[in-house]
Image (cartoon, rainbow, N blue to C red; front, side, top):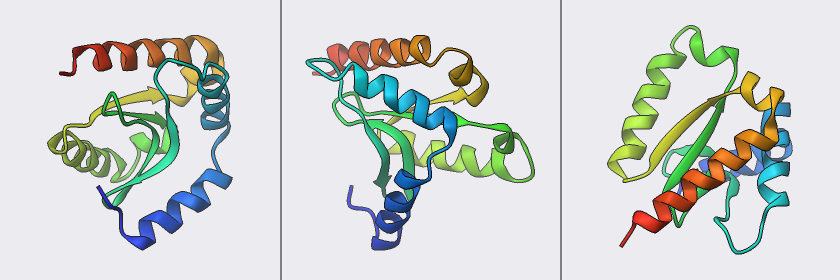
Length: 122
């Protein structure tokens, strides 16, 4: 889906200002690049920017820090997830703390999930 120009510009900015958990997860996902699932970072999709996206698996990975549990963020995240699910994109939310504690294990689980989803698709 083509994203509006404003979303594309935001994605470009976010690629340069990723949080530490996002950087660590991205490093692990790229380290394993090869014949397996390929991910994009800060991918614009419709009005949103997805932290990590695997197009073949139609899988969005979001790294959520503390702020995602405060103020109106839970409701905004729910609306976003519903939008993506309607577009047949599965959303997985990971805690930033888990990524910080073991980015390699988290990336391994993400790659496995993406591979399973790819295998299930016609």
